[in-house]
Length: 181
Image (cartoon, rainbow, N blue to C red; front, side, top):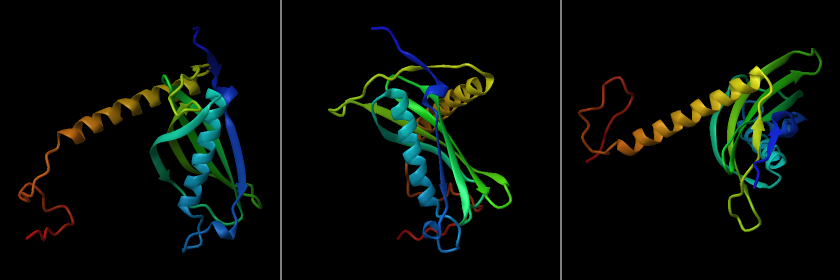
């Protein structure tokens, strides 16, 4: 069977939503959990559009809240497929908030979701590859490869750590008091 390819543009999704008082946290800013929910929705839409299949979130890599989002701002999320594996896709999402009175736009978040395409029985299905057509898309592809390599390194390092109750190897620079009897 021939491998199918799609341009990144074919799968891009953009959503915009006005931020309401009901979306706020206790400090009056838009709640990060609400933004995470929107991020997951757009990642699903982008991955499903690319794969033409139902998709699930496998992991979320990097969610840095750079700037707070205010009530009344128009939040726009732009999602693109940055990388494809056999059944997985890395979806890059940029979050911007616009003050609709001044037109000022601020970058609030960039996130990377790994999504996996599934069939009706819940088994992984192959996804189309991507056609890279400009330097920005190539840069995002390279960054995805690097992120995958770093994740594998972290997992290998974490599995090599042996837990102990010895506290002599914990430097004084950490803000911790060990009170194990």
